[in-house]
Image (tube, rainbow, N blue to C red; front, side):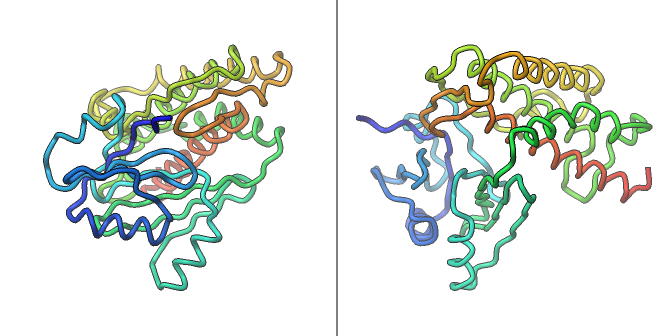
Length: 281
């Protein structure tokens, strides 16, 4: 059976150096190598394409939809055992950052030799009631977090190089929108095969003009989508156990997808609160 084409592309300066890093620390394994391109497999599933230099021929090896972060940007790996990684990094004195959201999940971040931020996410247990409550809380919280902000306030940032409040809001709403598509398919067609179509948040930010747009319509859409999903979950038997099957992430239940997007928005809403505190607005 031919393996799925990669949807993550890492452009590196030194192929051997990068491959050695990922093999040693994360246990990734090589599937094939052709000149300056190499496809590697992750232990938890999915493929990554490494490409050296600035050539563009790598596109013939990737899926039609792929993400290619720039050095300094992060990409996410799901399902890794954080405690195992933590022990290895500490034994070899590798710097890392760890963010823990009790009951929800933990995120470990480490820089690779090219400056990419490898972000490993591991879920922690949360009851179904808490998952739905967290998702529902975003409906009221987005209004509370944005209350009283002027148009100029929406352009405030919490630090140099960070996205503004306006950009942050449009980003996590777009993430809700892309996840909504998957959730709806899982609810309507339990167990169907689904081809994930990843998006690059930075391309969407520039491509849809986050900096210059209003947010009112999007905020209303965000709340209506969540109300719609919650209504479906309430009236459909076994709703949270319904699922889609994907090539790169395996089985994704409605429970897991709701939890994922609820936590994502929660983190960004907290960033907006931090920005308001910094600027006293």
